[in-house]
Length: 88
Image 1 (cartoon, rainbow, N blue to C red):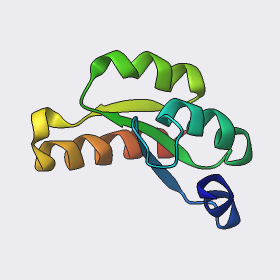
Image 2 (image 1 turned 135 degrees about the vertical axis):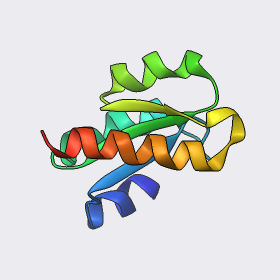
Image 3 (image 1 turned 45 degrees about the vertical axis):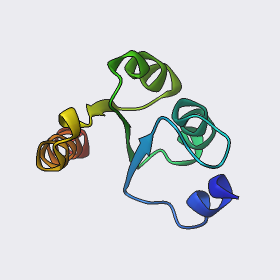
Image 4 (image 1 turned 180 degrees about the horizontal axis):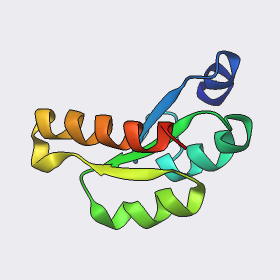
């Protein structure tokens, strides 16, 4: 259901956590939706840098850390990544 809802109205920005309640991991979700969202900036979001490679291999444009649980840092990192990839 999550994948279908995401594709109904394609977002400009997709920020995906690694652990999802829908039963998929973040990299699995990205791999499923990336082909249908060519104009969306897709970011992996995790507190574990070990998940970054999985996100990138699945098609994420970049990965953003949770900033040692500092929400301000996380938001700034997301904004920078979106700005960088929105220009391409």
